[in-house]
Length: 255
Image: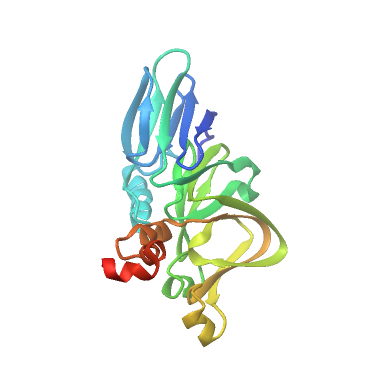
């Protein structure tokens, strides 16, 4: 894995944020396809298979890397934005839905690595490696609906992830935290992630908190989001739960 490029950045906005990355000559930032908002003069972009962490990698290696992204539901290709001009130039990216953009310095993470939900990645300095992280506890995938297939980011530079709604960072010190399965954005290595049944049968059926909860146990940092994209979609659906909240008892007459 090559050393990551040094990049400067700014994050604009509150609820719907935008990331602007400043590149020196020949510096490159990689991003999800379709995330770019604007780019200034001198910046060129190219779609490449894989994450670009190993430019000398052969075709087969790139195919394996790209295939792992396909398993997580992402594009086979990553877009590389490189400043080919003079001085400094900027390129900006937006998140796919309202929420918060988190800057992550991978050098400050345990083992220079961070484990995230499969759709959390937005952009990163060239040299950042993206790979699949399979949760060894199969129940996380079969019952929790979240977390069986996660994504690992490794490197020594800046990476940017996106979360829905407000983000809270928790520091666990040999502690246990139980969370709605969709609200886990990222956690450091050393944190054990599993999905467990939420209480007794009565609580599971009538509690409204879901049948299963994610359990995070160990020592390290954890990032949580208040509005996962699944909850946002459900809230905005024509016949979602919020439609009856808005209309009260009269909502049934409007359907």
